[in-house]
View (cartoon, rainbow, N blue to C red):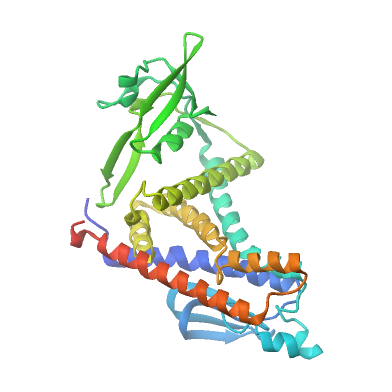
Length: 371
């Protein structure tokens, strides 16, 4: 299949990252406004301002040149990364303290910071819940009805008619759970428990290490059992159940992210699987070319990724701010300005180094390099 034209990639990237980052920052803004904290600037993108206006509350709303993020700068912040201005905090007058983020109570600051990732989580849950309400909950009992041509499960002794009830001690009720349990473990030993003629049998095996290439040339590496099931059903669900199912789906996604990162750190997966803005642009264009529904589903995945990354305890990210607030709560006083400065410098350096790394990783993984 031919790759989409360049403008599809650009449009997909802007339609994906722009709204998701804006929603994230709007979560910070709304929570701050709820607590009376004044926003000096709200920017979609970084760098030079392309267009903007100042509202009656004194907030400068900006559209900036680099569409790789955004920020809210509250009163009392030294810069858009919400690093507190130590001088202003220590010597601020009563008027300067009013509506200042660093002078807000600790619990309010924590909620303002948490509101950004929480908004991304709500967006992801809302998208999945919408899919469940529109199409129903897909249910496929983990009953083996056939095998792939190459099947490690068949070689291990699993037969047609067996029902998979557990993998590595974890119960499974659906083929989706079987897939999720196996796909992140290519070429690794696992123990399946199957039910056969009323008896439960333990079946040890090593999953198939399968590398695939999709229609756009993207490569992936997953684990497979080589089993088939053909009793797919869609159960109608109401709003409350749909939200619960959506929350469960997002929890599974986060668990898979954590497991994937762990495997990269211990060397079970290549660092080439890490992706940055170029890879996001590539996938967003491909999903957009497939239609609205695949693109919206991909948006939910990226939204939960944004929440997860921002909650990592790295200074300059939301999780770093929350870590400082936790220390402040324990010490009953803020960390000193020198400590904050060094921590944020290190955090910014780490984030920038990671961005450079994943961008280079994205570039060398493009088909033109042939690797």
